[in-house]
Length: 261
Length: 69
Image 1 (tube, rainbow over the protein chains, first blue to last red):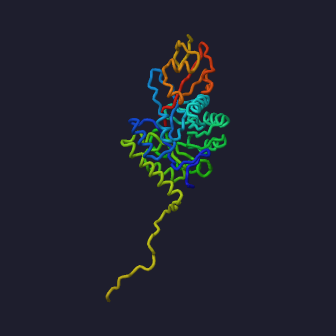
Image 2: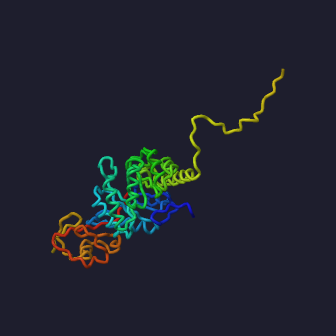
């Protein structure tokens, strides 16, 4: 099959990357992942609870043949992110990492300077780096130059559900970058996912829009369909927008009613 | 007994190595495969867990995958 998402040499039939957090319970999480069709699931790396509760999400997801993508969520410096990525590599035996370095506690926007620095270090250490970044074409290009495996610009702030705030930037990023572009963060509903795919994104990473909807399993299904529709529309190529109407029925050959004189 | 900082908490434990410590903390062996351990900021690969002898004051981090976005 040719129409696949390929990142760092690994191909997937689904273009949706899904988060594993904030679902009402574990079963809803698993059912939502299944309904979304996602094959890549993000996880965080955290200290174990020394008072017990050692149940791991890792075995649950791994036995469903899902690819786990550890993140560096919660990191504010390149050093912390590199350390977390190294721990993740050891825990999950994967060199893939969703590189996330926050620069502002209120907006949770990425710190481009730390991100690029960490990406350079991690690429040298053999990681396939998928950076969560701002929708800034220059920052995205710097991450490509650093050797990242994809770029993951935000649509809007994490968990905000505001959709894509800057389609202009997204279009510039798409036109200049041939690496996979995964829209990460800000998706609110299925039409946002459709729009991202219509504008040529290779995939979408989302969590809150599904997990916090009233019916996560149904929303997961909606996201899958919305993405598929958007991707097919992108491949088909939309018509250019025009200012004025253009008749779709033939303009000649219209019957005329005879009038008695 | 060694005074260690385990996941940010000062503790006195009777454990010399990572496997000792995980047993002491009653982490089931079935869950060891998804853990990562660092000593003083350096990740210790699984095959070296038994080789690292803790010293007084060492800072140990024990982590695993959790749900995340």
